[in-house]
Length: 284
Length: 269
Image 1: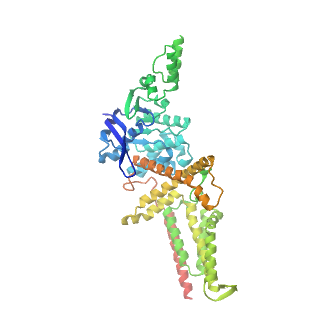
Image 2: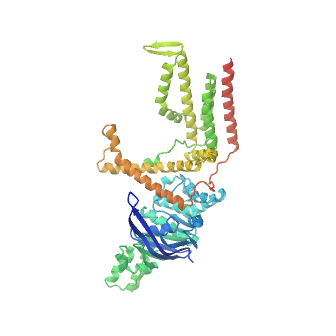
């Protein structure tokens, strides 16, 4: 059994009018089956309203399934007695960095999670130090979060989650509000955690460039999983992605167009390096 | 620009007063205020004044920062002094038109003025030497006994510290919305008071909506990080008394005892 598993998961948002009568039901997730293995880097892609954020909130027991079930580390999220275990094991980083930092000093914010878990003071300090070092924010530990850049704030948020020693981190569009440099910083930090510490990462994003490093990509549309596979597999299906109103990385698009105009390129080119090598090969 | 504002009025420097436990500073300030109301004669005021001057010197905070706090209550001070001066019955000194200044009035006015200004200076020493965070922690610890009568002490302290954290963010947001509205022709400057207040509506509505959205997000983020109220929570920076804190308590109580006894002794004479 993987770290996060979902079976026939469905979730409905119920809209009500002023009197509380049901106005309509939106099925945000519609029959999703999922199995994420420990240590994987999974990217979930999808257009706005595809249900990807709703899916993420199920992995931290913030939302509960309308139908089906979600298990985190083998524990059912609907079981009240596992609630805090689940929230500790599956840490969550949200979109807006300002709205998830609680402390007025960087180190205090990172310590917030461990404080809630009742960790002894001495160990909190150790955890804060190691987490801040893991995201490269240790020298900013005494700063006020208000004076950091967006990318730095998001790295502090990640450190705050790592300090709880989770098995899995869910990043819900962590880069949507950042500039390109900030995006790079955050993705680099997430990849380092995955590779060095072996933490399972679930990255929800709509930037294709961020997904190319994943072990597995899941593409969602209208609450359903439309495609699933390695980045190479997914990005070689350019036509299908376009139908889902998703972009492909620029390099892949270029390779795709070149191939269409007659160059004998391979499918599934996702990095500049690969394209350069393919072109060299053809030249010979 | 708005990013740089400091909250409260903390003055960053290193002194023994800065390093004292925040609980000591809160308690000492309370005791000092009590002492001001127990003073019955001018010797008491001199004692209080000397105590205050000594603390200011030790705290390394420039005196002009204390005066800043005084400006806010200048109006209140003038009114209080005025009323006491003219409306206290007693032995008349000078009569100006229909107003009479009495001997008792002068005494009362002067002592009120001293009391009020000492009170403000005393409490501003506390806020100048303690970070808002520390102050919140100290209050939480001091109010802890109230938990027994179901006062949500931890929650109140948490709300205070979140409010402090979000003030700069909301200020920045206000600035942004204001500029956006000005760019679309909104006018926040001209017109009379009522008009100005009306013009603030397009600023306040989006600000409130955004504040609610932020609160919602923050609550979710806190829950995702296992926040479940104050129970079973440990502290990253627990408050701890050191020798200097006990010493400060001793000095404060000694001062209080002195002021009270001076009042008694001189009243007998």
